[in-house]
Length: 251
Ligand code: PL3
Ligand code: FE2
Ligand code: FE2
Image 1: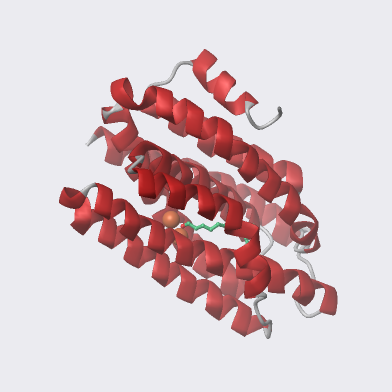
Image 2 (image 1 turned 60 degrees about the vertical axis):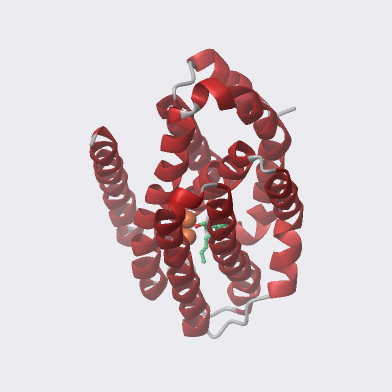
């Protein structure tokens, strides 16, 4: 119950923030030219990353269900949303006449994908949830928020729908980790230490292409840290623990 309220509050906050930002952008006509070769070239990689990310997210929720069989129905629901997201972003690329560079995207996710697979094999549910439901979802949320402000009208509408779902996914992981914090804290910290630096690396890797789409690197980092820290606070970690975890990104 408390949880549902929280989602609503967050969305209200976020959408308020977006409205302000968006109207500023539109007023100043600050949107990029979506038809240039340089825009399309950058979009072919960014779009592929998002498509691959949504597909892997689907696969990861299905995999997580093998570790929590009594959550199969809920996790299948989350997984299905990811395929819908994938279809949405595929349409965004098609709409701009861009072919997604899927080879690039597979490589982009490979390290994180590998770590998820190892955790899955070992039955390390906490690590799987941290990677997919916290780190990847917070990354997606930050990217989509920034993208919505500078997207073409077609993609903007689709991304607005998607980002709402991503909060449900983040929330799913958050609630499980909150309920099990006493037994999963150590694994959570360790998994974070290994995987947060990968997210930071991925953000650095995508920054140049993102800037061609008028997405600012600092803004991406800021949005990521907001989603990440909020979630850790909800899980029940204190400020010192959160600071320690966040520090893993800079060392
Ligand atoms: C989980 O539901 C989805 C995971 C996707 C990961 C997305 C990473 C985003 C990288 C930066 C992309 C900017 C957004 C552009 C959208 C076409
Ligand atoms: Fe998604
Ligand atoms: Fe998601």
